Image 1: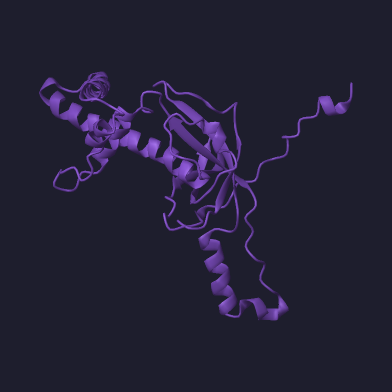
Image 2: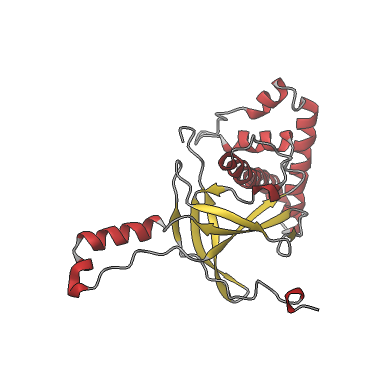
Length: 241
C-alpha cells in the first residue's frame, strides 16, 4: 500500500489569524475555506452548530493602519531597515448555530419583529403581518410559534428555580431572549447568504456557504486550554456594494 493512503495531510500545526476587523460593508476581508464535519454537531438544545474554517483576504484594518502610521512617521527609513508589510496568514473558526424550529417564517418573523422594538417598546417593522400578507404564515401558525417559544422560556425559568411570584416577569424576559437569539443566529445565516450572492432562504444548505467572501471581526479565544481565532461578528453587506 502506498504511503499516500495513510498520510494525513492535516497534521501541520494551524496558525491562528490575528485579531482585528477584516473588510467592510463593500469589500470582503474574509473567506470561508471549508466546512469542518467533525466539529459540527448538535448542542443540548437540539440546535446544529455548524463549524467552518476561515482565512483572510488581506491584513486587518488595525494592522494596515498601524503599518501606514509607522510608514508616515519615517520608521521604515530608520537605520535603513524597511518595515515589513503586515501579514494575514493563519485561519480562524466560524460557528453558525441553527435550530430547525428557528428556520421557519413564523419564528423568523417573530424574532425580527421583536428585534425592531424601539426604546419605547414599539415595534418598528412588523414582519409577522408581512409574512401573513405574503402567505408564508397564518395567524394560527404564528400563535403556535408563540406558544412554543413561551413554553421554552417557561421551562428554562422553572429549571432555574425562579420564585413563583417572579415567574411571569422572568418568563417574559426569557421569551424575548429566545427571540433575540433567533434574530442573531438566523441573521448571521442570512447575511452570509447576502455575501454569497445567493437568494435568501431559511432552508439553504449551510455547507454551500464554503467559498463565500464576507467581512467581520476576529477575536482570540480559549479552546480547550488552547488559544485560537474565532469570528465573533459578521457585518452586513452594503446594498450599494
